[in-house]
Length: 397
Image (tube, rainbow, N blue to C red; front, top):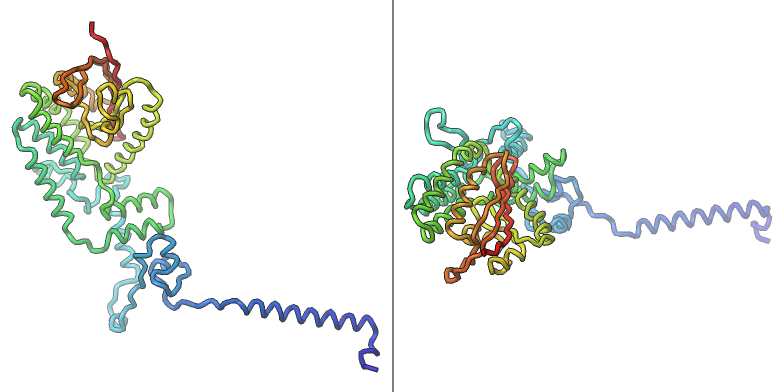
């Protein structure tokens, strides 16, 4: 007889349950240990270290690949032993403060003061009677072109433009201290904590410093207008248009002096939103209509207007045609005169007049008489950004 037979049934049952629990726990422990052991990484890449995230041994690591910055993944160089023995070393937060100052120096805050890192100095010699300077090179170029128009009818505007381009190239040729493109990718992929508005400002500043954002260059629009006037208008008509520019140049110059390139970039963003809004408006209206910039380049038009002037609708996009190229000479001069009278008058924005439309081809001499109204859309600085025109054909008796 076995010794287990002498035990009571209740004691046997308890011993069997205890054995089953021990067996299950040992099996669970084995299951937990069966998985691959997580391998520790001794040195993470610079982006994973900054985000306090897990890295791996691969270069690029899997996290940087998923964030589409695999080409920037690298290890931060370790300081040499001689540098560690240097008695006088820079504070640990010195580099961070310099980077923060560099990324935010471009933005013009509520105090209204522009940074010294802008392409041009603000109000440099105005108090001493020197030439006018502008916070934005683009606005300075536009004012310079208008001034050149008023100085002489036969001035060589192309020389002025080449000088502006050369000066821009010389400024951009200065080697930066850090890599702006890499700084933009880092900022966009992993912005710092804080308010959404501050983070957006930081990303916009980094994108501008990297050269990926530029304001619209209106200088080319004035050069196009000058070329068109020289080849298609009489001297009297050109003089009338130049007189109009002389009327709004002081108001334009007063506003333009305080604008920075970041301000102009935000204005351009608002312009793109207006284009999206008018895409929906033009698709639902049956009246011939189009919109153009203040220099005349047409950026949107509906199919009714394309049929009226007999051009493909694709030509009414991205400045391929100008509004004054589709008007008879007297109508174009009349438009510029009425536009100049209310361009910077915030109390007026719409004008009702008439015009003669034509096909841009020189051999096509037929014209269409229209009742013409245009509305000026201004930005928050009261500068005309978009002009929207509606045209109703009129049958002449």
